[in-house]
Length: 254
Length: 293
Image 1 (cartoon, rainbow over the protein chains, first blue to last red):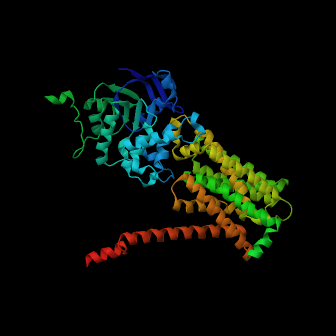
Image 2: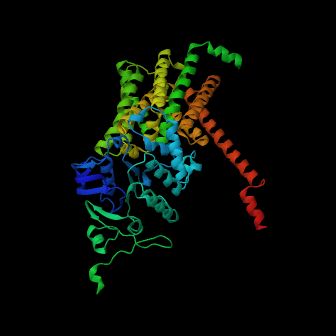
Image 3: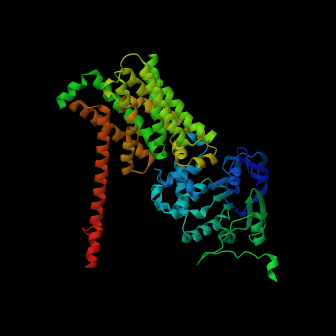
């Protein structure tokens, strides 16, 4: 499958603090990668390195794009919920349109075409009727769809989600992963989560990030691996929430 | 009353005051919406009080105190914006330091200046009736700059104010825009010191916006209503202060607060009436009582 981007022995961090060390990862079309790891292990930093917000100390990121694709954004991003001010006076449509911001479009107001694009995405997400509402009046699940719409409006080739399950109650969560599964037919997805149990059921591959990155070419991880990388585990689930039972350590089989 | 208003308009100082109130309402309505939305009211308080240092130095060396205030305000604004991010000093602690440092500097220099400082109270509490034609001219320039800047850069201002971290992922010049906006905040504060004074100027940047926020939760509409309420409050305050011969800054603030209460109460009553209609003329607790019976 075609490669979208390649992270080549990247070391990155903030100030003189190294958060990621010698990370290698290639992302292909239709990948669905779950990134797990402890808090402060560098999960979000990895996403920021891919988006170019954090510049690596060493190593580089290579994008494999055709010339006409350089015109548009490759990545769509859904940040963590807790950084957002829900009382800010802004409407749903404006939030979605902010996914189109770029240095070039600095002056102009939105064209009618951009607004139509925003409406069509809101319709797909089932929240067209909320288009003129201020974000403060939405429920967690609705808000998550707004931010997903913002990430999707630039039709990215790689969608990156940072802890999307902190947004919502578990009933909404099942729907949300179903949407992601549909989107995965058109784009690669990286999802950062502390919730190992739920995401392993949906993702195709798993990467553990704890300063170093360990990539598994399947969505089954062993207890031994989890312990080795000090990945936090959340395995107890109830009702309809699908979850993966992790393989036991081989020594336990006697 | 109308006659006396026509009479008043013949006085130069009164037309100047009216113009100053109008221009300050426009600048504060726009900038205040940004301040309230971004929750940087405390930063603005710091900038306001830091500017008093410049007023004192202006007094002592005999140049226009407003010029000194502008220099102090812009430096402390950019200082808060940049230093806390670069050095890891807590932002609110830094604001506290600049706040008190500015006031201390100001009072030392005013104290050292020879003679009595008659318009010191004006700088502290506002004296819109002593605004000069030159002041009005400076305020007009600032108002035009702010209007143009917000029309040209409406999108980036809104997006960066709403979600800075996300704007950074789109390679937006977040830091540059923040610096320009905080400079405009500082200049708006300094220009409005003539109207409401160092101690009271925060009112023009927060009360009309809070009133507007009752009516709307859209940034653009909030700017519009903030300007309207700031204008209504400051003109009413100006006339009341003239009629009753009380300090103009304080009477403007009371007008703004009364306006806020009026909108708040009528909004509350309206929603109550609407609810009564939906519930067949009974309020929820009355319905509950009916059910129990």
